[in-house]
Length: 172
Image 1: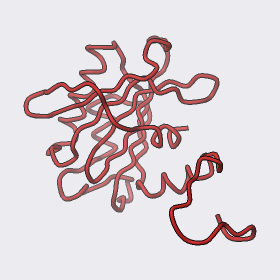
Image 2: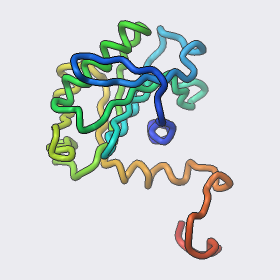
Image 3: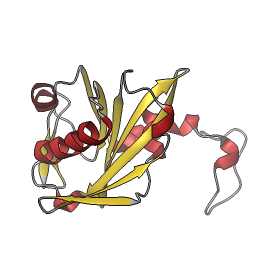
Image 4: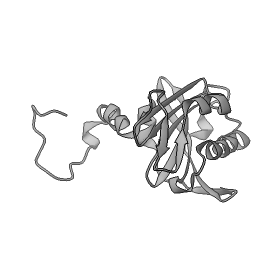
């Protein structure tokens, strides 16, 4: 489910600045969700942008309420940036997420941490649990998310960019 959410995160339409950190927010289905229910975050740490989607599960499917994005190059300390994003979520929507899945580039450590994302900052499960009080933290390689999520995409929505037509017996 988190994989599907990570595939949904796109451009933002509201901007706010927090001590030289530019965050853009886009609202999706925020008005149709219950603020008392469990909240989740799906995060995609990309080469250009880092995106954080806040969502709930409705009928076992993720419903994206809003997303926050910031340029990855502007993140010096992941926990500091993430604290500002969580503060926004609480101050504006009174949301305190309990679970997070982060897709980031690079190789994980034995503890499933990312010791250096683009040489800019570290992401550690221990810090996320201790500093932000999450019940569950999952950090995965971003390419793995694509691998897990590819079968969730409706094949009618896939556009072939180049190469030959698909082959019935080829690996998918």
